[in-house]
Amino acid sequence: MTESDNELGLKVTSAGILSLIQDAGRYGAFNLGLTNGGPADPLAFYWANRLCGNELNSTAIEISLGGLQLIAQVDCVIAVTGAPMPLTINGQGTELWRSVFVKAGDSIHLGFTQRGVRCYLAIAGGFDIKPMFGSTSTVCREAIGGLRGGKLVENDVLPCQLAPKAGHKLKQLMLPEHEQPKYSNEVILHTVLSYQQQHFSRIEKRLFFSSEYQVSKHWDRMGYRLQGRAIKADITGILSEGICYGAVQIPADGQPIVLLNDRQTIGGYAKIGAVISQDCAKLSQCRQGDNVRFEPISLSKADNLFHLNLSKFTQTQLINCS
Image (cartoon, rainbow, N blue to C red; front, side):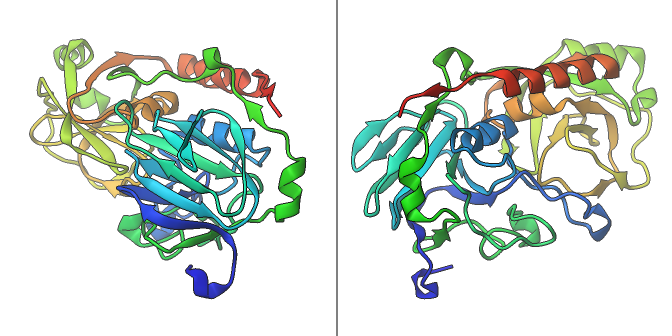
């Protein structure tokens, strides 16, 4: 959408390296060959929306590495969460993990992060983007979602659902610093043994869980290819089958690939298991050279951990800083 559409919102003056429209994801379309998409770091995405008083599925922007610049065409409230990208409004430094009132004409600039990869910019009321197959999430490989099925570009305008006058009535909230996630260049990926685990010997499994891997130069929203001690299965391939979020593929070279949001819907590599969703989010904040270790976890413990984290998110109290 451009200015000629006569809708007001946030105008892109510089799109940065990779800025994508995302909601919580596209589900129920695997049979059409469409993957989930959605935020690579759902926790940061949900916090951005919660800080803006939004439904957690509201459409926001995912910014990779940094460089996004916007001009506000309306009064609004925004929040930026995730990797520590320097945020300035009209050249003045502004904290992340809090909602901020922005006036029409203000310039919003996200610099480049030295730690982590992705952050999220939400706006009170959400961005008013037309869904495709039930979601606004952008998957560039499939050319679907967002404004035109691709990344944001200069002069795009992201219309806001919220009437400008309502912005003055919204609370400005902050997530306490001790509750804010800390991004590290070393992560542990808790993994449920599953899929073709029977095709990996006991020794190969022990080596898999005792070895350290590094993120290779091949990492993106589709998946992270790791490098380290090769793992071998007793089969060279399988019939293509559906692939879940976090599945750990072991291709012919034995170097694990952890599949993420924009993964293909089916594949024929043997898979030793699947990384739990919370740790996939941590992996999505890693970049080339960061260290990764796998740790086994039972399905019941994984389920308990998921609900404990969900409970913590819903019970954490925000600070009113209006």
